[in-house]
Amino acid sequence: SEIVLGLLLASVTQDRAASSFRRLVVCAEKVASAVEKLAGIDVFLLAENRLLREALARVLENKSDIRVVAAVAYDSNVAEHIRDLSPQLLALDSSVFARIGLDVVISIRSIVPEIKVLLVGMDSDKEMFLRCVRAGVCGYVLKEASANEVAAAVRSVAYDGAVCPPKLSII
Image 1: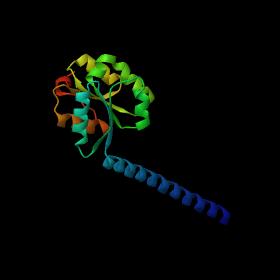
Image 2: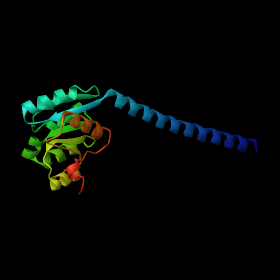
Image 3: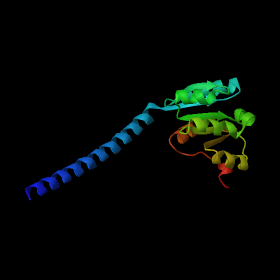
Image 4: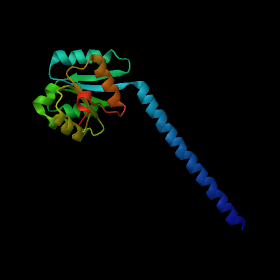
């Protein structure tokens, strides 16, 4: 009976240790998430027009919580470049989207599935908006958006939100 009691006591102690360890892991994950948010948002900016690319990069870099890790025009190796830099978010200009279409989003997300995609400078086309959402786009910013609205959209999408212009929200 002493052996059975000892085994029961060891089992209870082991269960408590396992439960404490699970709580510790959950706590560590929450701390890691908070540290990541404090570290800022890494953005990969993909825009065809150099002037627009540089302007967007400056606007975003002026925000203390946003870092532009790259600002480039589209080329066939862009998905690998994104994978190598590991940004949280891809800000994609409408000119790239117009030239290549949803294929650019689909191909990048096939190589970097965790990337969040924000389309910038888009038209208020409800059908296109829905197609983009189905392809994994989390944010859709219209051409008339201000610099502050673009930065707010970056933050929202980076932290698992979604951005839908008011003009398109009644679908």
